[in-house]
Image 1 (tube, rainbow, N blue to C red):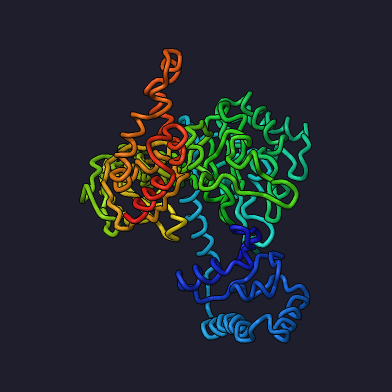
Image 2 (image 1 turned 135 degrees about the vertical axis):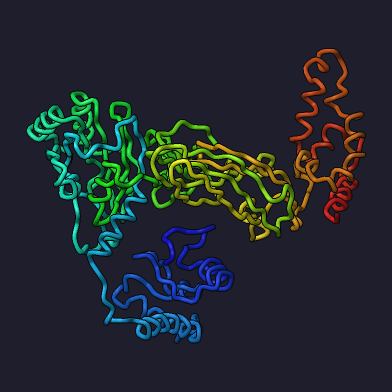
Length: 561
């Protein structure tokens, strides 16, 4: 499916480089490409670029444009035939492989969904409050406790075989239930609020089920804020004020602000956990499942912290992705910004220790691989699973890159006291960034740091490896090239060094007459300014050192290297 936006000035639906050159020729995709709903700008240009199917159909209006384009010679008929063939091939593949007699077990699949959500839910905070005991007096508070929001809206909506709520799943545990808030709108219902507060007073622990209703997030539009409904925030504040043992379970599809985070002892992020989410949440709350999910996104403290905040929405019909590669943790970690919960974060009911990290080589070429291993030990009292994350850092890179990037991860299950060795194989892509001129991934020659951690902010082991590039980076210098950039190239440095020596002797900056000038421009200042000068500026500050013709000849000599 192609995107709505322009990529380097060309609509995604008309971009041959991505729809054909990369998707089909480079990646070997053999299916058909459809548009996102309403993403077609020019149907004829789209087919030529590799867009086969328009969605929705536009009532045949744009298909008539294709017929007209073929008749007028603007669209080669064989190109249109190719698009039709791709669609029919997939239809034929479906007809040949469908198995209408297939029998499936709805109850078994429901239990599988419950197990999967138990693996995915993320324990964000736990100040000794979880797991609960089966004998504890507990109140489940909040509309979502009885009616969980378990899936997204729009085209992601499915008809589930059944939906299991937390109230239903915990019916044998004697929990009491209070609705707490209305789901429609964001109006405070004082009666529901008072009932919830009274319920919280009667028990040992209050578990509040909160999050985002469908009216707050869905496909087709973006959220304009990160707040939960105010009636839910007020409920959490009120319950926490009378019940120190308060846990919040969140049902939401994306990060939310948590102004009450320091007033509750536990937070479990259930996300949109599927039809069995209620049972999975109860499994985790009562310790029948040890949580092992990790955040696949950063939770910022507030909306304004987001990397897209300044430019989100754009100006009229123009919106630019100004954050570039600095999205998510790549932005927050590079800025060393405080966050609510970092990328990769997720707690457990046990603890894990990392040790003995090593690599099978200390140096490699970029067409080789390195195997990194470390030991992980369960130092707690219950069985648990840990997601070990491998981040790679290029500390000496001369391009603007994230501080470090996740390159591999693995989940390992350990009994109490058990140790297992986890190994990862890293190749060129682990050390690379995408080089626009090369149109490929490029690993700079240099030393890289490899971190193993439990999140992007919880890094526990580190080793280094030296990577030598086998690819010559295309660099063309001219008179406007920055001198410091030229000096970073060993071959170029060899050629330009005699000129630099002559410049330092004849520079109008470094050899100014008069005490005032010499005190105003120190050698240190001169050297610093020199590195950031374009090469042509030597002609201004040291006109007797070299002519423009000789300088151009020097540049040509460097480029021949």
